[in-house]
Length: 329
Ligand code: SAM
Image (cartoon, rainbow, N blue to C red; front, top):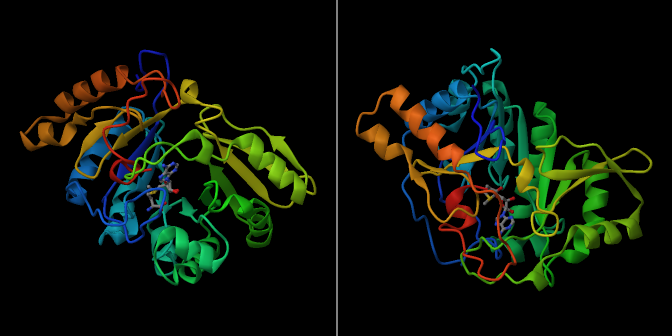
């Protein structure tokens, strides 16, 4: 019986953070001075967790962080994940979310090891603005090379995620439209969520789905296309059929009712929601020698209690117990 929570949602999408170290200090994510806060586990521990979760019905595994490409051994880890078999007897879909800084060299080896898809985070398509947001000089060219190498390696689709912040990069919407068309990538805008280390989030900073659509329409008309229920992004294509845009709008158009996700943090805790106020110590159970069956029972019970929804923007909102970089986005 695949994993299901008490609200009837089927959980088939696993995200594993393999480190909470990051080589970027994006202004909307990190303070710029704080470093890694949690441990990293040996890959064999994540692999065991993934195997057990795939036995429980997980069909997609996304590697994230921190910055996952900082972790040596990631290619071999992908190769091991690719040997797992879902309940339907298939290889799990394997995806990666990365800032792309180290991707140019790694795209082909990762693809050869069994990676299916990659999402690269890019919050501006001009080098100067990019450096201002990431607080790292000269990153833009490396990331662009990573995006291109991914396409060349046959990773499909290559998605580019952009978080828009009022006063920083909201004027980049049309530029990203051009970028999607020229580079043949799916550009997805993500509404800024209160998950940053600095705790500076206000509703006014969020550039919402409606505003993004209006700004993009000034460049070229878009039409909405169908998306799967559990997909986080609403999907649009340009009217002439060239280029796809996605908008992930957890703040203005929450999609918690269709959430199919569960997360493992770099230190081996299970999280049932980005906005959870606690996590569940799967690794500690493993460390104490629990058998696979015991771990399965633990996971099933944790998943049952997955939160119904987030409470962003509501009075009395309680911030998540970890920020994005320490959860795994
Ligand atoms: N280092 C990798 C990267 O840059 O993609 C993976 C980790 S990063 C935390 C994952 C994604 O979360 C990135 O696309 C980033 O832009 C996004 N992100 C970080 N903080 C966010 C926030 N407060 N709201 C929305 N998205 C956020």
